[in-house]
Length: 473
Image (cartoon, rainbow, N blue to C red; front, side, top):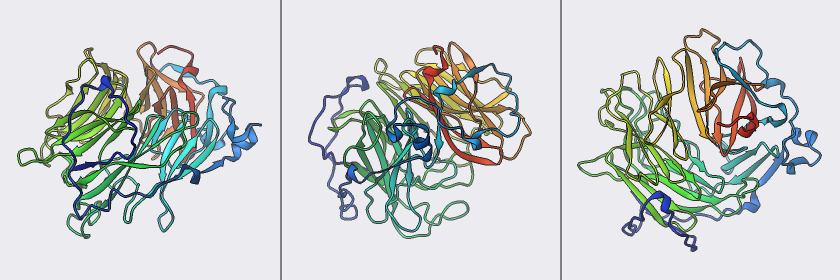
């Protein structure tokens, strides 16, 4: 269930690229149980705190305000300490003058040279959005207006790395939520004692500066609701089956988010609402009979994944990937039906325009495919290499890879790799390697990654504009 609250009075034209307008019945009045949810304290960007890193002061005469591409001081912790396992791929060099580094912190999503994360003290203190800017080497914190009992941390669930943030460089969306009802119910390791309780959530948005990505206005509630689907990962057997917060995507001033629409015949039905910002005009509604797992939005293109057998925990997973563009508004299936029992994890998708990269994880291999609507999919990773999909931007695909079957240290060094139609796979040279199951993040023409060492994460964020690779994708 959802309720829509558009507090901004300014209306904007519908975005025709996302489809024809859809008339939505007026939202019902909130019940007594949720009547307090819409109210939200104003959050002024004046309360934001910006801290320049020590590296920025030492490296640039202009300090935190520098916007050049001068190299930052070398970070010793980001230098690999052992010989990396060979991938057998040709390399492509990242010019040292284009590489930016600084200490990394909380981070969930990226946009260009910026990382957005959530910082919420365990004992006391306000929750904040943390904005790390590689260009200026500064960290900015902006308070998130939470109500009693709410959190902005991603929900629990080891199989479901839900993100509570989304951005398109113009707007920042934050999901805040709280569980309803007493503790108890669905228990067991690794689930918490109240994992199965309904989740009351609110979707907040705030405008961003086009120059440095900082928050320039108050957070506003655009919609709120309650999630009740006790979704359990098909084929997993035991897992955290509690309700999930909505999936959110932003692109060019348009926001897409999922909302539960349960009925007797379709207990896992999900809507994808697409609205324009800041006015909130309803652009499009995509109604699905199955549980939508993830959503990606880019211009007039929309991609989403769903589970077709959410009610059957014992069956093989039946994942589906759907894709539509402004020229083809009706979603077209790219993947559907039962998969091998090893495909327990949901598909991963990354979208840039009408270029879609997707991955169906497997216990033995992680095949990555790239396709445009109407064209055949291209498998971009050879069977001798295992990769994690990181993102798509400016015609490039970002991957984190290691040799299949490699017997390495417990913290296996992951190598940053890029792919394009003109270059094929290329291992990045001149940058630190990664650790654990990670991959570079690509957005707005930039690649960002967290450098690592063999003993664990080094805490060094690095990035560079993809144009610095000196070749057309």
